[in-house]
Length: 510
Image (cartoon, rainbow, N blue to C red; front, side, top):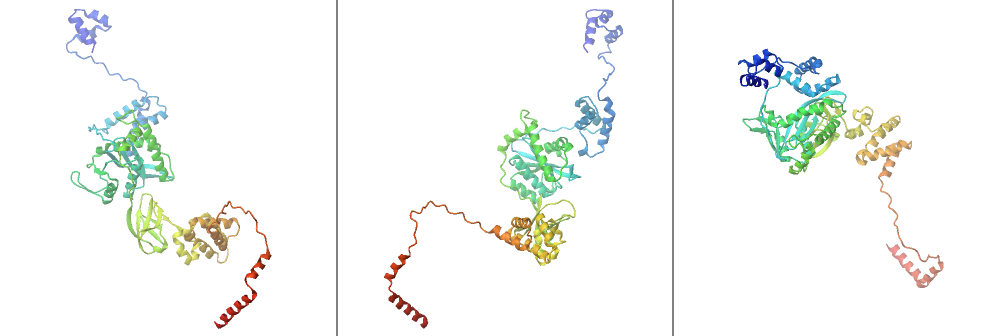
């Protein structure tokens, strides 16, 4: 572009010959003549493509992209994941070249559509956004799909992830309580989509029939719920992006865990680490943790968590069990064949009757699992001591009780002795009975009488400490029998005899 006007100015204005121009610019005369023709206004060169370091890996990367295209969107690998895999195969180039290749391939396949959005700005403590995602995790030696709750503050961009087995009401309530405790307060508004646990019916415009329990939670935490329009995920774009970022930051390198509680503890610690490392997108000189600390004074303090349970009326079976979501939980025998209320929380199941808690168990999410508490069956065991040998609830007795039972069962009437010892648990406490049993086993005298003796000794009040005194005896007393003779002078024997005679007459008269 610089040569064309120079050649034309030299020739037509300065009168320099074509040969001289070609010599000065080291061009051929035919090239100079072509540029001097009026139909040439823009010099064009044949496209020349430099050899890229990605060329030996291009076909393999293209195959990976085709394989990912048929997978669900949440399982597709990002360009950064492809770059890491290529590096392991020996790719020496940069991430930018891989990202450009992936972007161009997706444009050619029509996967990327141009979109236009309006940037949003939130004041400190103004709002938070909530969303669910589904992730595959190795839990308890199995590959399971979990529902993950994402809660994100709109101003500071602080976020928290909590994993559950379902998206039920009790999980939703627990996720909000954990998030507000993690953030150190409650914002004024909550932005979420039209999930079934929050909205019973979507009406025209922004009108919604809000679920009663969700409305109660929002009223407890005093935040205003705001629901997005249908198929308008960009209205909560921050938490939508957080779902994608979490798959790259957390789930692609998530280790295996034994329980859900261990996974959630790891997620909370990783969120704290990322808050201290990631920079705020707008306040780039501060980390997310620093901006969160500045936002916390604008949040409403969390006074008490919401009692987020879902209550179901259930009937206790003759085997002292209640059924809930294909699992069974034991209840005290006094409530057999009666209707009670089962309160389902995110991590536990509580059975309530007549305003009091009659059973509480950790919640299980499998199928056909039974959770026993052997103390619930003690009233029945007192009437049927033979059930101690093969009773399913008593397979979970403490080890000390099992050792004592193995000894007593060999004696005549040993079942009754063991039942009598277990019957002391509701009155004396499990810890006291366990200590007495362990002491009896150590003394090699395992019997009911010895355990009872140890229990009485353990529960007897301790002897009072000796009273410390500073008094000292100045003169020690001496034995002096002669002092009794002085009393004889004060009470003559005749007077004493008359007194005795009078008393004896009164006695005979009565």
